[in-house]
Image (cartoon, rainbow, N blue to C red; front, top):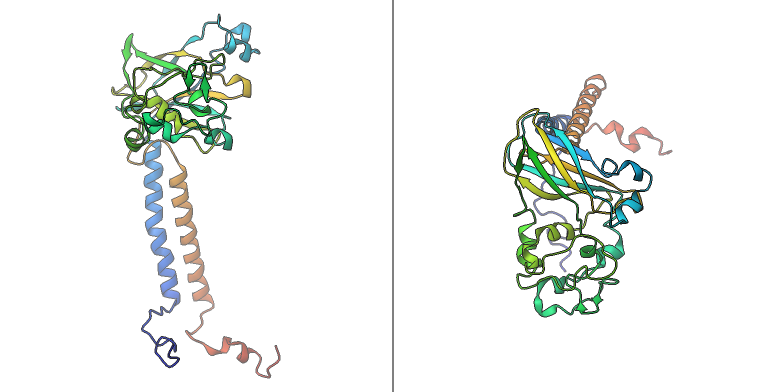
Length: 325
């Protein structure tokens, strides 16, 4: 390599910005001017979301089972149906999204996350592929489709909504990701031997419908990263007016009592930013405010203790002219 080349001597054209006080202060002010309005807009949009939450795992326990939730949910003779009334605080424009929320449910547990076989879900030819599906692998009639703990524990509570004695239709079409429906779950793969054992984990699947159309399953199989999570149950394509009373008939089947979990049904509208979430707005406001504070601080320092650009008096050898450090 030629040591006398411009590259070796670092003489190639380069951008060498000089960070003058004006440039630094202007940069911080520019970030603040951009971020603060965005943060306010995000908070305003989040506040416009109308959301109704109703925790029902305790509400649906009969009085005689108030301290015996596990015994109640495991009993085959107890009535699992309960009714609740929800009041619409403000007008809710369609579509209204229905979610179920689970607390203290660790879908991110390593063994739980691995307990599935993507090849089996994707193709009928891989029906016998049950690797990693322990302990839900096979039944007396052959391999379980879909196998694994995730599918076995499928959420099976149901909700029916009505307003003024009129039943609200809850659409379950297109509630799962399009990429999942089209690429991860085969249109020729049908449930087989599912929930046929002695211990039933959750919901059963219609064996005449392919997995690519069983969107409740697809939503559930996309595991959550945190122990408290929401999953989309369906959509109500009808607007609701303020002070409307929504009657909810809940089929309380899912066992959260054995691990002190919570169950909540949520109705929510959306805005351009999505559902209610103030974190993004607070984050933008915090960063913008911090940049504005730093800009003001630099201005005060520059005004009160100015220093000429490239002042050599601040160099170390000028501070110690005798060479003593």
